[in-house]
Image (cartoon, rainbow, N blue to C red):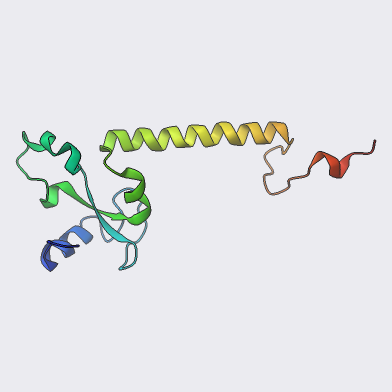
Length: 118
């Protein structure tokens, strides 16, 4: 957390009660990162706001997992990214359920050759 003083670091960490701003997981020394809500690549978007790139208003406490997924996406883009991922996974899940006749019991995979009586 280079360039951020302890007081500011503590304020960022406590911004949402010591939880990741995105998924709500408890943060600790091992998973705590800082996300720029508006990324450096899009910092020109902050010109009309009353705060800067490294101001606490533009910084969120974040777990490493969410931070690596959000990247330089805006909040809107990040929500769409998650939605798209979920829809893709749901399509895959539905395909697997139908193909392997799981009937929603995803922990009971049986391959055709295991029941074939031919």
